[in-house]
Length: 299
Image (cartoon, rainbow, N blue to C red; front, side, top):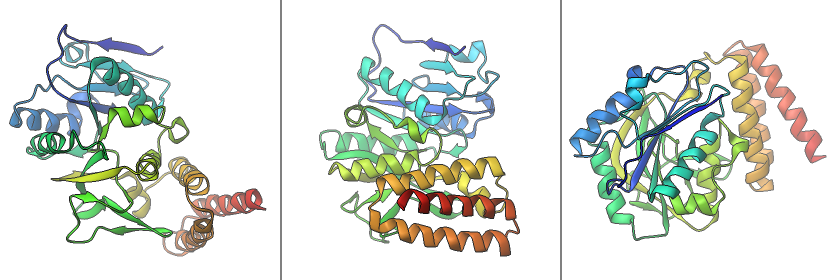
């Protein structure tokens, strides 16, 4: 049974951002995100206890003593994924008057200036209702991974002289993204169909589809991207099945129909890479099965 703790004071401090940190088999005290969040909060003169933690681990990763230093805590041993965590926090944010949700994974390294920069951006765009999300730039082992410009059938790096507010469609990783609470509430919350993977792509697709914009903050953070494990041939079959299923669902239900054949070609090329380069026939078989399933659904 899930356990919920809300340490809500009678008068919530005037902080418009509610961070949500999602844990999975990672103790709170060892989370790189939590450790750097505390340092960044102190640097920005913010209350580090104003953070919600959603624990998807079978065994709780937050001690009773640590709970007292959190704004809200929920232990969900059934593992509802990030969608459940975000929706839980969205309800709290609406009831407590927060304007923005800051989405955080457990393995993101936040620079000391992150929250200060985010606070400046929120003050700048708070009255600009066209801005639905604020994202930092993110790298994984020095390689730029987010945000990316959404082009026909692919993702491309942002231009070197990218505007502060993107006028074109972009997507970004969840961790480090601040999203406007009323906008997400207007969508009915986060889509539970993408309970773990591709939720970021779905969210930014909805932002663009509703005529909203994404602002890019001045922060650069380091993040351990899960998909990188696939590129380094370290992904398990179970993990790849989850990534592939969510990816295919997103492309076939949210993208234009003319983009689906391009995706199919990418999957075929992926099979070749999985067989020749990675020597992972198990992954290739799963990818082939997905190609067949898409063909059958489109027939």
